[in-house]
Image 1 (spheres, one colour):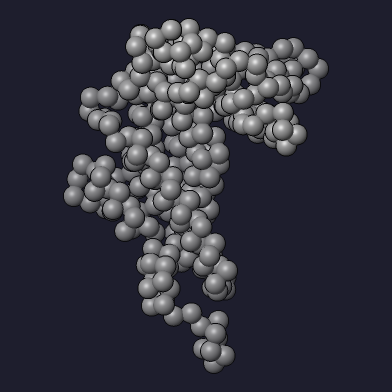
Image 2 (image 1 turned 180 degrees about the horizontal axis):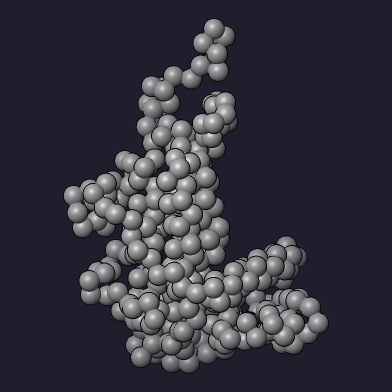
Length: 317
């Protein structure tokens, strides 16, 4: 920008069109040790980043609306393994964010926060979690475990973003906060987990990305419509095989498929086929036991148990 050339951007114009938060986020996302650039394209990217963070926050708030941490929280040791991983990953990120804040490095915080919302949460954890949040019994351990993790992540996320998305953080704090202002709070304490847990689920994320690519190839041929219509068989070397088999029946939830099995082989590969079973109208999984209860012929045995019985048992995902 140059005032003499007349190509400046007036903050008042940006604020009136996009909101003051966009100006704050642009400042925070820019490396102030060098030249600062701003134009319509840069601001459009900032708006996209803001929407990504805000939409993630909306999902977190919506899915903890019936959760009371004082009554419904699940102890860390009793939580499902993927929920423990999500909190451990959040604790890992918080350490990095605090280190940046101590030396007034704001742009790495914004970059890491965007990546966390789009990949760690949106691209993996929240996507896997949807089945449990939407189909498990409302007060079941499986659902409350998920909500406990989401609640703690929300508490941490609001603190991370509050220095540069002040209005948004304060707006959300009015919904989930227990004090007058987010700016009266200290950073939340998150369970760190262990290196083995982080390594295991980081590898599962990598495998999931590969499986998603293999499913997409089959989907483009028209053989399957969505990942839930697919059944996958993974061939894996001993180390990956042990990791995959440790999830037992919960493996299919990690890949968002209706069935998933792992067998021994020389290298990681995926075989994808369309399920031959009927589709459950409630959970959208294709299962052999759809209609097992004649009183509810359109839903599967899992959903029937979650609605009218003791509920399914989930331990990993």
